[in-house]
Length: 117
Image (cartoon, helix red, strand yellow):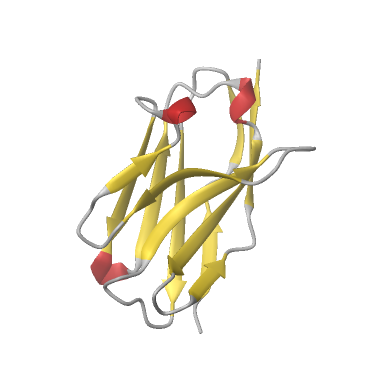
């Protein structure tokens, strides 16, 4: 069992920055992919960024060049540095740990990010 605790959300003006953190408790396997998703009101949850244990990354087109995902394997923690934030980035951001081969899929409780114009 893995528990994920997110922090770092809040209210920021457009153009500002926030850094989200997600600390995982429990065993994180080398094949686990850690990532961030977001869900805006009335919209489906979408992938923002993901990272493997060897630091291969994947980003949604809408955040490329503005967001950076990183991972500290020793601390079982994943980060999301968000720069040049836009009002359309407003959403609840969820941390995720997934490993389809081991049928693992864990979610954090979510942290609100609000970007004012």
